[in-house]
Amino acid sequence: MTSAALSPGATPLGFGPTTNKLLQPRFRVSAAQAFPSFLPKQIEIIKDPFARKLTTRIERLPVQVSFSEGSIMSSCVKPLLQTNTTPVVLLHGFDSSCLEWRYTLPLLEEAGLETWAMDILGWGFSDLERLPSCDVPSKRDHLYQFWKSYIKRPMLLVGPSLGAAVAIDFAVNHPEAVEKLVLLDASVYSEGTSNMTTLPKAVAYAGVFLMKQVYLLKSVPLRLYATYLAFNGLPFDTCLDWSNVGRLHCLLPWWDDATVAFMNSGGYNVSSQIERVKHKTLIIWGEEDQIISNKLAVKLHCELPNAIIRQVPDCGHIPHVEKPSVVANLIVEFSQDD
Image 1 (spheres, rainbow, N blue to C red):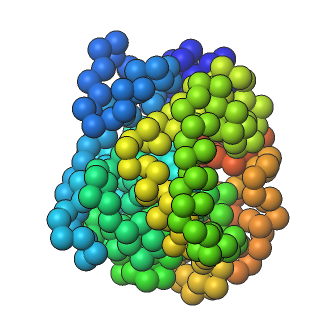
Image 2 (cartoon, one colour):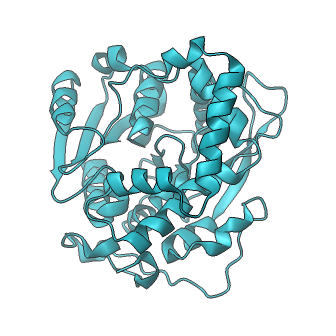
Protein backbone atom coordinates (compact mmCIF):
# COMPACT_ATOMS: atom_id res chain seq x y z
CA MET A 1 0.00 0.00 0.00
CA THR A 2 1.37 3.39 -0.92
CA SER A 3 0.81 6.62 0.94
CA ALA A 4 -1.35 7.84 -1.91
CA ALA A 5 -3.71 4.95 -1.29
CA LEU A 6 -4.29 5.82 2.34
CA SER A 7 -7.82 6.77 3.20
CA PRO A 8 -8.63 9.15 6.04
CA GLY A 9 -8.42 7.19 9.24
CA ALA A 10 -5.99 4.58 7.88
CA THR A 11 -2.75 3.78 9.64
CA PRO A 12 0.23 4.35 7.30
CA LEU A 13 1.30 1.09 5.64
CA GLY A 14 -1.28 -0.75 7.72
CA PHE A 15 1.33 -1.18 10.47
CA GLY A 16 0.07 -2.10 13.89
CA PRO A 17 -3.39 -2.11 15.44
CA THR A 18 -5.17 1.11 16.23
CA THR A 19 -5.27 1.36 20.00
CA ASN A 20 -8.02 3.98 20.14
CA LYS A 21 -10.47 4.39 17.29
CA LEU A 22 -11.39 7.84 18.57
CA LEU A 23 -7.94 8.98 17.52
CA GLN A 24 -8.46 8.39 13.81
CA PRO A 25 -8.19 11.54 11.65
CA ARG A 26 -11.51 12.42 10.06
CA PHE A 27 -10.40 15.12 7.63
CA ARG A 28 -10.78 14.54 3.92
CA VAL A 29 -8.16 15.64 1.44
CA SER A 30 -9.67 18.05 -1.05
CA ALA A 31 -8.86 17.66 -4.71
CA ALA A 32 -8.20 21.40 -4.94
CA GLN A 33 -5.23 22.27 -2.75
CA ALA A 34 -4.11 25.78 -1.89
CA PHE A 35 -0.41 25.48 -1.13
CA PRO A 36 1.42 28.44 0.45
CA SER A 37 3.21 30.49 -2.19
CA PHE A 38 6.56 30.28 -0.38
CA LEU A 39 6.81 26.50 -0.78
CA PRO A 40 8.92 24.97 -3.56
CA LYS A 41 6.88 24.08 -6.62
CA GLN A 42 7.94 20.44 -6.19
CA ILE A 43 5.17 20.11 -3.61
CA GLU A 44 2.97 19.27 -6.59
CA ILE A 45 4.69 15.92 -7.19
CA ILE A 46 4.08 14.66 -3.65
CA LYS A 47 1.32 12.05 -3.54
CA ASP A 48 0.92 11.53 0.21
CA PRO A 49 -2.52 13.07 0.94
CA PHE A 50 -1.68 13.70 4.59
CA ALA A 51 1.49 15.59 3.64
CA ARG A 52 -0.44 17.62 1.06
CA LYS A 53 -3.16 18.39 3.57
CA LEU A 54 -0.77 19.52 6.31
CA THR A 55 1.23 21.59 3.81
CA THR A 56 -1.82 23.77 3.18
CA ARG A 57 -1.76 24.74 6.87
CA ILE A 58 1.89 25.86 6.99
CA GLU A 59 2.27 29.59 7.55
CA ARG A 60 4.98 32.02 8.54
CA LEU A 61 4.83 34.07 11.73
CA PRO A 62 7.23 36.91 12.62
CA VAL A 63 9.68 36.06 15.40
CA GLN A 64 11.99 38.75 16.77
CA VAL A 65 15.27 37.23 17.94
CA SER A 66 18.26 38.73 19.72
CA PHE A 67 20.78 37.90 16.98
CA SER A 68 19.02 39.55 14.03
CA GLU A 69 17.79 43.10 13.47
CA GLY A 70 14.59 42.13 11.70
CA SER A 71 12.01 39.50 12.50
CA ILE A 72 12.40 36.01 11.08
CA MET A 73 9.29 34.85 9.24
CA SER A 74 9.13 31.45 10.88
CA SER A 75 7.21 28.50 9.47
CA CYS A 76 4.83 26.49 11.59
CA VAL A 77 1.43 24.83 11.73
CA LYS A 78 -0.87 26.63 14.16
CA PRO A 79 -3.50 24.80 16.25
CA LEU A 80 -7.02 24.42 14.94
CA LEU A 81 -8.32 24.99 18.45
CA GLN A 82 -7.27 26.92 21.53
CA THR A 83 -7.75 25.14 24.85
CA ASN A 84 -6.99 25.58 28.53
CA THR A 85 -4.89 22.42 28.51
CA THR A 86 -1.11 22.26 28.19
CA PRO A 87 -0.16 23.14 24.61
CA VAL A 88 1.73 20.46 22.69
CA VAL A 89 4.66 21.71 20.57
CA LEU A 90 6.07 19.30 18.00
CA LEU A 91 9.66 19.67 16.81
CA HIS A 92 11.26 17.55 14.08
CA GLY A 93 14.51 15.74 13.40
CA PHE A 94 17.76 16.76 11.70
CA ASP A 95 17.37 18.51 8.32
CA SER A 96 13.63 17.95 8.30
CA SER A 97 10.40 19.93 8.73
CA CYS A 98 7.02 19.99 10.44
CA LEU A 99 5.72 17.65 7.72
CA GLU A 100 7.10 14.80 9.83
CA TRP A 101 3.91 15.19 11.86
CA ARG A 102 1.47 14.78 8.96
CA TYR A 103 -0.10 11.65 10.45
CA THR A 104 0.14 12.25 14.19
CA LEU A 105 -0.79 15.93 14.45
CA PRO A 106 -4.38 15.39 13.21
CA LEU A 107 -4.79 12.60 15.78
CA LEU A 108 -3.65 14.85 18.61
CA GLU A 109 -6.11 17.50 17.47
CA GLU A 110 -8.89 14.90 17.30
CA ALA A 111 -8.11 14.15 20.94
CA GLY A 112 -8.67 17.81 21.83
CA LEU A 113 -5.06 18.91 22.34
CA GLU A 114 -3.88 22.37 21.33
CA THR A 115 -1.10 21.28 18.99
CA TRP A 116 1.64 23.31 17.31
CA ALA A 117 4.22 22.00 14.83
CA MET A 118 7.14 24.34 14.29
CA ASP A 119 10.22 24.29 12.11
CA ILE A 120 13.55 24.52 13.91
CA LEU A 121 15.61 27.50 12.75
CA GLY A 122 17.69 26.60 9.70
CA TRP A 123 15.41 23.76 8.59
CA GLY A 124 11.85 23.64 7.37
CA PHE A 125 10.23 26.48 5.45
CA SER A 126 11.11 29.68 7.33
CA ASP A 127 12.30 32.69 5.33
CA LEU A 128 16.08 32.83 5.77
CA GLU A 129 16.90 35.10 2.85
CA ARG A 130 18.74 37.35 5.31
CA LEU A 131 20.46 34.39 6.83
CA PRO A 132 20.81 34.56 10.60
CA SER A 133 23.17 32.36 12.56
CA CYS A 134 22.03 28.74 12.67
CA ASP A 135 24.13 27.51 15.59
CA VAL A 136 22.71 25.94 18.75
CA PRO A 137 22.29 29.19 20.76
CA SER A 138 20.45 30.75 17.81
CA LYS A 139 18.13 27.77 17.42
CA ARG A 140 17.46 27.90 21.17
CA ASP A 141 16.73 31.63 21.18
CA HIS A 142 14.47 31.31 18.14
CA LEU A 143 12.43 28.59 19.85
CA TYR A 144 12.24 30.63 23.05
CA GLN A 145 11.10 33.80 21.28
CA PHE A 146 8.53 31.81 19.30
CA TRP A 147 7.23 30.35 22.57
CA LYS A 148 7.25 33.76 24.27
CA SER A 149 5.36 35.42 21.41
CA TYR A 150 2.73 32.82 20.57
CA ILE A 151 2.46 29.97 23.08
CA LYS A 152 3.06 31.89 26.31
CA ARG A 153 2.53 29.06 28.79
CA PRO A 154 4.44 25.93 29.80
CA MET A 155 4.29 23.36 27.04
CA LEU A 156 4.62 19.67 26.42
CA LEU A 157 7.66 19.74 24.13
CA VAL A 158 8.06 16.81 21.74
CA GLY A 159 11.40 16.09 20.08
CA PRO A 160 12.15 13.18 17.71
CA SER A 161 15.69 12.08 16.81
CA LEU A 162 17.93 15.19 16.85
CA GLY A 163 14.84 17.15 17.88
CA ALA A 164 15.23 15.39 21.23
CA ALA A 165 18.61 17.10 21.64
CA VAL A 166 16.94 20.42 20.77
CA ALA A 167 14.26 19.72 23.40
CA ILE A 168 16.75 18.77 26.12
CA ASP A 169 18.95 21.79 25.44
CA PHE A 170 15.89 24.04 25.55
CA ALA A 171 14.41 22.50 28.72
CA VAL A 172 17.70 22.90 30.60
CA ASN A 173 18.13 26.54 29.54
CA HIS A 174 14.46 27.57 29.76
CA PRO A 175 12.84 25.24 32.30
CA GLU A 176 10.00 27.69 32.92
CA ALA A 177 8.76 27.24 29.34
CA VAL A 178 8.43 23.45 29.58
CA GLU A 179 5.98 21.38 31.58
CA LYS A 180 6.84 17.93 30.21
CA LEU A 181 9.04 16.36 27.55
CA VAL A 182 8.43 13.60 25.02
CA LEU A 183 11.55 12.19 23.31
CA LEU A 184 11.23 9.80 20.36
CA ASP A 185 14.19 7.65 19.27
CA ALA A 186 16.37 10.35 20.74
CA SER A 187 19.68 11.28 19.14
CA VAL A 188 21.26 12.73 22.28
CA TYR A 189 24.56 10.86 22.64
CA SER A 190 26.35 12.05 19.51
CA GLU A 191 29.16 14.59 19.78
CA GLY A 192 27.62 17.00 17.29
CA THR A 193 29.57 18.09 14.21
CA SER A 194 32.63 19.35 16.08
CA ASN A 195 34.97 17.77 13.53
CA MET A 196 33.42 20.02 10.86
CA THR A 197 34.54 23.17 12.66
CA THR A 198 38.13 22.57 11.56
CA LEU A 199 37.26 22.24 7.86
CA PRO A 200 37.83 25.15 5.48
CA LYS A 201 34.53 26.74 4.58
CA ALA A 202 35.01 25.94 0.88
CA VAL A 203 35.31 22.25 1.73
CA ALA A 204 32.13 22.34 3.76
CA TYR A 205 30.29 24.09 0.92
CA ALA A 206 31.54 21.50 -1.56
CA GLY A 207 30.13 18.73 0.63
CA VAL A 208 26.75 20.42 0.93
CA PHE A 209 26.69 21.11 -2.81
CA LEU A 210 27.20 17.43 -3.54
CA MET A 211 24.53 16.50 -0.99
CA LYS A 212 22.04 18.82 -2.61
CA GLN A 213 22.72 17.46 -6.09
CA VAL A 214 21.92 13.99 -4.77
CA TYR A 215 18.75 15.28 -3.10
CA LEU A 216 17.56 16.93 -6.32
CA LEU A 217 17.88 13.77 -8.40
CA LYS A 218 14.66 11.84 -8.64
CA SER A 219 16.58 8.63 -7.99
CA VAL A 220 17.87 10.21 -4.77
CA PRO A 221 20.05 7.27 -3.71
CA LEU A 222 21.28 8.84 -0.48
CA ARG A 223 17.91 10.16 0.69
CA LEU A 224 16.13 7.01 -0.44
CA TYR A 225 18.55 4.88 1.51
CA ALA A 226 18.16 7.05 4.61
CA THR A 227 14.36 6.80 4.32
CA TYR A 228 14.60 3.04 3.83
CA LEU A 229 16.70 2.71 7.00
CA ALA A 230 14.39 4.94 9.01
CA PHE A 231 11.35 2.70 8.59
CA ASN A 232 10.58 -0.95 9.08
CA GLY A 233 9.72 -2.64 5.78
CA LEU A 234 8.78 0.38 3.65
CA PRO A 235 7.58 -0.36 0.06
CA PHE A 236 9.66 1.32 -2.62
CA ASP A 237 6.96 3.61 -4.04
CA THR A 238 6.12 4.87 -0.56
CA CYS A 239 9.83 5.27 0.19
CA LEU A 240 10.23 7.43 -2.92
CA ASP A 241 7.25 9.64 -2.07
CA TRP A 242 8.31 10.05 1.56
CA SER A 243 11.80 10.96 0.35
CA ASN A 244 10.23 13.76 -1.68
CA VAL A 245 8.39 14.94 1.43
CA GLY A 246 11.59 14.82 3.47
CA ARG A 247 13.69 16.81 1.00
CA LEU A 248 11.12 19.45 0.06
CA HIS A 249 12.63 22.10 2.32
CA CYS A 250 16.09 21.42 0.83
CA LEU A 251 14.89 23.09 -2.38
CA LEU A 252 14.66 26.51 -0.75
CA PRO A 253 17.51 28.79 -1.93
CA TRP A 254 19.11 29.27 1.50
CA TRP A 255 19.26 25.59 2.44
CA ASP A 256 22.96 25.31 1.52
CA ASP A 257 23.98 28.25 3.68
CA ALA A 258 21.87 27.19 6.65
CA THR A 259 23.26 23.65 6.51
CA VAL A 260 26.86 24.84 6.29
CA ALA A 261 26.30 27.29 9.16
CA PHE A 262 24.95 24.57 11.42
CA MET A 263 27.60 21.99 10.51
CA ASN A 264 30.40 24.51 11.02
CA SER A 265 29.00 25.57 14.39
CA GLY A 266 29.62 22.17 15.97
CA GLY A 267 26.00 21.06 16.30
CA TYR A 268 24.31 19.62 19.38
CA ASN A 269 26.20 17.86 22.17
CA VAL A 270 23.77 17.45 25.08
CA SER A 271 24.93 14.25 26.76
CA SER A 272 26.22 16.23 29.75
CA GLN A 273 22.87 18.00 30.10
CA ILE A 274 20.65 14.93 30.36
CA GLU A 275 20.90 14.53 34.13
CA ARG A 276 19.97 18.20 34.57
CA VAL A 277 16.51 17.67 33.04
CA LYS A 278 14.03 17.70 35.93
CA HIS A 279 10.84 17.62 33.87
CA LYS A 280 8.69 14.54 33.69
CA THR A 281 9.67 12.82 30.45
CA LEU A 282 8.16 10.17 28.20
CA ILE A 283 10.66 8.21 26.09
CA ILE A 284 9.19 6.51 23.00
CA TRP A 285 11.38 4.17 20.93
CA GLY A 286 10.85 1.95 17.90
CA GLU A 287 12.06 -1.56 18.69
CA GLU A 288 13.36 -2.03 15.12
CA ASP A 289 15.25 1.28 14.93
CA GLN A 290 18.19 0.68 12.58
CA ILE A 291 19.63 4.18 13.06
CA ILE A 292 19.86 4.51 16.86
CA SER A 293 19.96 1.34 18.96
CA ASN A 294 17.11 0.95 21.42
CA LYS A 295 19.79 0.07 23.99
CA LEU A 296 20.31 3.82 24.18
CA ALA A 297 16.65 4.15 25.15
CA VAL A 298 17.42 2.19 28.31
CA LYS A 299 20.52 4.31 28.95
CA LEU A 300 18.51 7.50 28.52
CA HIS A 301 15.81 6.19 30.83
CA CYS A 302 18.40 5.51 33.51
CA GLU A 303 20.01 8.95 33.21
CA LEU A 304 16.85 11.06 33.17
CA PRO A 305 15.74 11.65 36.77
CA ASN A 306 11.98 11.58 36.06
CA ALA A 307 11.25 9.45 33.00
CA ILE A 308 9.10 6.59 31.79
CA ILE A 309 9.78 4.53 28.68
CA ARG A 310 7.51 2.93 26.08
CA GLN A 311 8.85 0.83 23.20
CA VAL A 312 6.87 0.43 19.98
CA PRO A 313 6.96 -3.06 18.41
CA ASP A 314 7.60 -3.53 14.67
CA CYS A 315 8.63 0.09 14.30
CA GLY A 316 11.72 1.88 13.03
CA HIS A 317 13.33 5.25 13.74
CA ILE A 318 10.35 7.56 13.17
CA PRO A 319 7.38 6.19 15.14
CA HIS A 320 5.21 9.29 14.61
CA VAL A 321 5.20 8.55 10.87
CA GLU A 322 5.20 4.75 11.02
CA LYS A 323 2.92 4.22 14.04
CA PRO A 324 0.97 7.47 14.43
CA SER A 325 -1.96 6.00 16.34
CA VAL A 326 0.34 4.46 18.93
CA VAL A 327 2.38 7.65 19.33
CA ALA A 328 -0.72 9.85 19.51
CA ASN A 329 -2.25 7.70 22.22
CA LEU A 330 0.96 7.72 24.25
CA ILE A 331 1.25 11.51 24.00
CA VAL A 332 -2.43 12.03 24.90
CA GLU A 333 -2.18 9.73 27.92
CA PHE A 334 1.06 11.38 29.03
CA SER A 335 -0.40 14.87 28.66
CA GLN A 336 -3.31 13.90 30.92
CA ASP A 337 -1.19 12.09 33.53
CA ASP A 338 -0.39 14.22 36.56
